[in-house]
Length: 282
Image 1 (cartoon, rainbow, N blue to C red):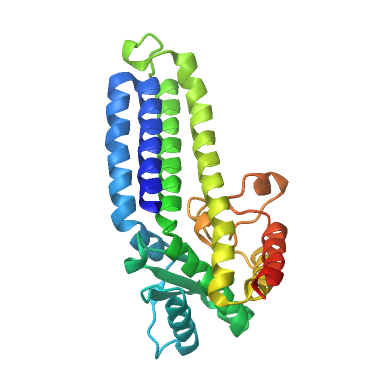
Image 2: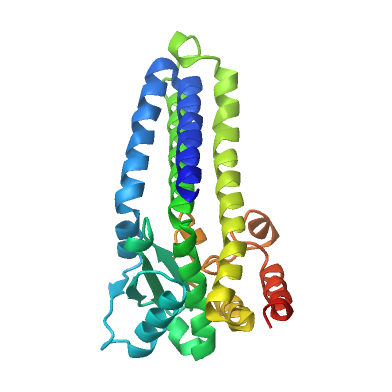
C-alpha cells in the first residue's frame, strides 16, 4: 500500500511540475520540467540517503565503537521486525536524529553526538524507536520525494522569474499568458511547500505512535521530545530547510510565522498524544 502511495505521489508531483513548466515556458518549458522530474525521481530513489548523510557529515559506527547506541538499535529493530539498519553518528552539538533509506533493507538510523549526552537510555530508545517506525512505515522516501519536488518547483519558478526580468518576451507564443506565469511563480512553490508540510506532519504523528509501541512505553519518547525541543532552541545547527523535515525535531528555529509553516507538528500536541497512549497501552 505504501508503495502505491509513493507511486501516486511521484506521478502527482511530476504532473504538477510539468504543468508549471508548460505554463511558464510552453512546450520547451514542459520538456525541461519533464526531464527534471525524471531526474528528481531517479536521484531521490537511488541516492537521497547518501546525499543527506554526506551533507551532515554522518559517519557509520560499529558495535565496538558505540556499543550502547548500536545495541539499542539492534534490540529495537528486532522488536519491530525489521532488518538491522546501519547506524551513523553526526558530529553535531544539537541533540537530534533522523532515519533514511529507500526501504527497510537499506535503512539507516543517524543520531548526533549531542543526543547521546542529553538523553538517558530510555529516552534514547524512544527516539530510536521513532526512527525505526519511519523505516517500518516506508514513509522516508515519500517525504524525501516531496522535498525534492518542492525544491525543483521553486527552482523552475526562480528560473522563470529571472527569464522575465532579463530578456523574457511577453509576446512569446511558447511562453503562454505572462499573467498566468506570474501567478504560477507565486502559487507553485507555496503549493509544493504545503504538500511537503502536510506529508511531514502526518508522518511524524504516525512515527510517534509507532515508535511508542516499538519501545513499549510512550513516555520514553515524550520525555525525550521535551528535552530535544528545549535543546534545539538553545543549541544551533547548520541545517538546510530542504532536509529539516527528516529530523525528529526541527533543527531550525524561528518566530510564529516559521511555526505556522513548519514541517513538524506542534511539540505540545505530539507530547499530549504520546501521554494519552499510556492508558491504552497499560
